[in-house]
Length: 429
Image 1 (cartoon, rainbow, N blue to C red):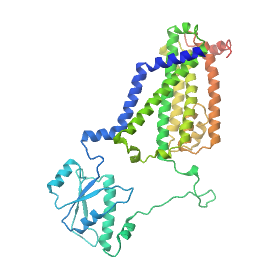
Image 2: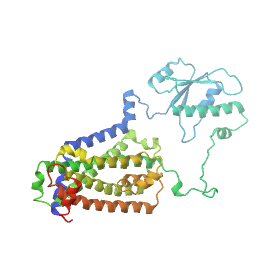
Image 3: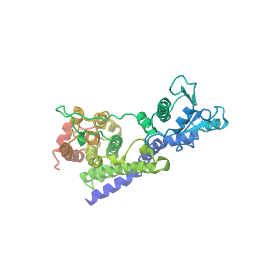
Image 4: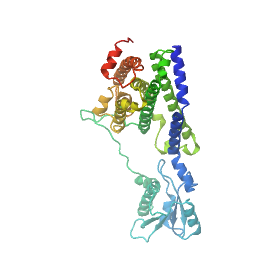
């Protein structure tokens, strides 16, 4: 055990200090930081100093214009886009032109001559001739209420006019199997958006970590074997201590990389200009499924060791680093299948393919993660999937130990399966 601890520590320190690890981690953190701060960076280059300022809309009308007064008096309901209406008497007003140039005013509204009992025809003028989403929603609601008041005059109160202009909300209810109406249970409620984001992020992160660390293990074992260092190493520590020491050491490297990436996300979220980023994206951390994080950690650990042991076994039977890519190709293809099945099913996580894949040990780490996060899965199904994955990991651990102990001292061309089986019978694990 002491020798394995030494190997774990040596592997961890050696891999963390490599340029490839540092550069890869740095690039991931930089890309993540740039992506999270891209809107702010764009605003800085555009010189937009009104990012957090209230949107202003100008209206061109003479003092006392009823339509303009009604538009100015409109108050947007809570939760709807907000704006401030500023009145000018002419489109040639110097202050209006200055506000448009500086970007403090989005555009201005003009009214044509009245053509009937309702509000006069309205035209919105802007630099690109388009209405932005929030401005369009605000103006449509404001002008609708103004038009109603313009028609009814003093016949209705302000509260009645506001009630007429408020959109009717339509609730939904799922029918029970017998066709009767009933409340949805907890499993039938819509999945919060934050769970989709976390599932997508964990799928990407776990897949990259498992594939990168797996290749790292295979490459190191093959490199030691091709340089004949392996013959010296096995005299100081048993092959099993070497294999599991390397696997656990690289596992710690993967955890460190994930920790650095998560820390980068937290730091970027704490920046002042990103304080409202989750709210702007309609993401609520309070709706996050905690079981997703807990089961995700367990699935990652079991999935990592399953693939890492396979990579270690393959790396031990390859004598030249030039042949390693071809040798690990089947494992990589298996990993891609495990990744793409849940990735392309994230919008429909309860298909038969996803359900079957969540019990296959090579695909279950990511597929069951998807079902827990955004699908419908019973606790017994999670337990069965984890049990199958755990048993498979132990079986492959035993096989990998036999293959590793045999393969590290087999040089020359890559041995056939028959030759490996024959050599494995000489060792008992």
